[in-house]
Figure 1 (cartoon, each protein chain N blue to C red):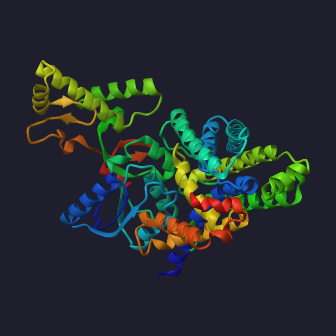
Figure 2 (cartoon, chains in turn cyan, green):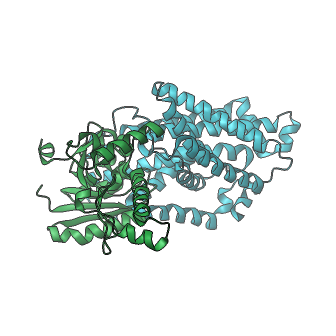
Figure 3 (cartoon, each protein chain N blue to C red):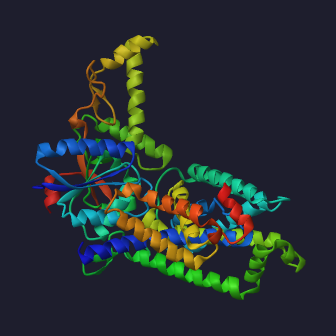
Length: 296
Length: 228
């Protein structure tokens, strides 16, 4: 393989990886406060993209994205308040089933609202054919946008959870809900906030990746599967690790095309997911509540 | 066009697989060698690796056989990595949404499809033109989106059934079936249907028109346009 080709495959891997990573980050927020995996996370990504494209019809791209992020946050808040907040004993299994149900409902609603067509925001810089070239290696500027925005997002989240009072309150609820409540923290509000935050992150991800991947009413499902794999591979709750894991999985998938057809690259993702769940579940799941997740 | 080495990419669905098999069968007869043959998943988010493999194989053109949105991602990624050879698509590309999704990358893509897509630019002598324009205008007035060939197929199916029932003169299953089999010269959106006991498809090669994308619109493909 010539070095140019080697780097071109690497670029392809980075492209896949950044898409997976930006989706994976959203999973981590809700996990961090509630210990559950929100299976409707992929639908937040889809909603963000769809709303962004719709708003872009009469607003410039940055405003359309801001609007889409806010609208998706609102959906996240509504979902939590309508379906989760009032549960007396919110067990992990119950919450998972609720989020799966919601993901199906949102998907069908999106089909009714927007139809089955594919949409996309315009490229942030350049067009669908432009690429930055170093020798014979080409990379779409949008990939750099996704990578940059993921990095900023991770930095901001780390700051929020480590340094702000609100972020610490959210983490306290994750560690020990009852003790946090005894200290005067409203655990319910923290859970709502975590849904709002991860919906917003999902929405932003949906807008940023839509020029590359397109968005369709059902595009959330496959994105969520890869995002989930990457979140687990990196260690649930750790956004920085999610980016590294995303790039690792993306590169593996990209180079796998030498040995098997591209259609089988999902096999790699799912094999890795199963391998981790079988071999290292306890090491990757931080607390006992979530460790039970692997049973389902 | 003097092309002898091509790449073939198709999606991992029934549509992609059937197309792949037929292209593999037909290619040797035209002296064409498939030097890269790749299958991609229909939910792909990016296909840079696939087009890189085509590029590495030095293809002179490639065929992209798919009916899913991923087909537009292939075109886009091909142009991004600097693979500038002609791209041929199947009739599965016959929805302007795909050309819109790929933006400037879709310019010059060549594909066969029914004349519905280029109804406006057909000569007035064309037999299908009135039917096509009527379908297109009523569809677009009702649904506020561009008519695609796929909705046209449903229109044709109902049209043929209606004609068959009319001809049979009764709602008798066997009679309608026989009438359907004997329909001749029915002008639909996909072409002019001529059925027989042997031919249940009803359309000939002439039902397809080679088309291309120019300034974001489907237009009739002519060799002169390609040589520019």
